[in-house]
Image 1 (tube, helix red, strand yellow):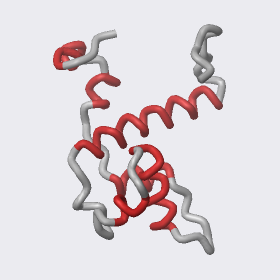
Image 2 (image 1 turned 90 degrees about the horizontal axis):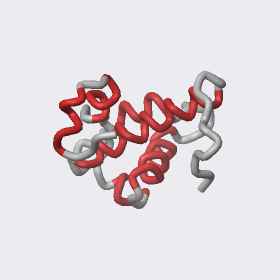
Image 3 (image 1 turned 30 degrees about the vertical axis):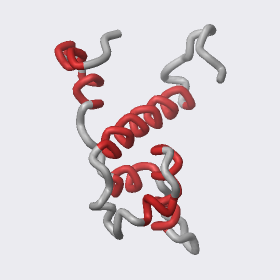
Length: 104
């Protein structure tokens, strides 16, 4: 697997997709359930904080629409989105993990 600056030359759809930014609001739309009686914004903030390794207070400080977020966050969110999609495929039995797949 190629990594680094030249990985985009591969032109595999996943490699191309992983280069695209994913905004926090879109990440929430895809992965945070809007449940009655639950504060959706707070759930988004917590989800974004968890996958980016930042504190919920930091995420909250990015503003109501998260526009003041650092640019690199959109790359982390894209990669988290891809991992979430992969998890769904595994859970559905569409993808099977190899026996030597790391358990930690």
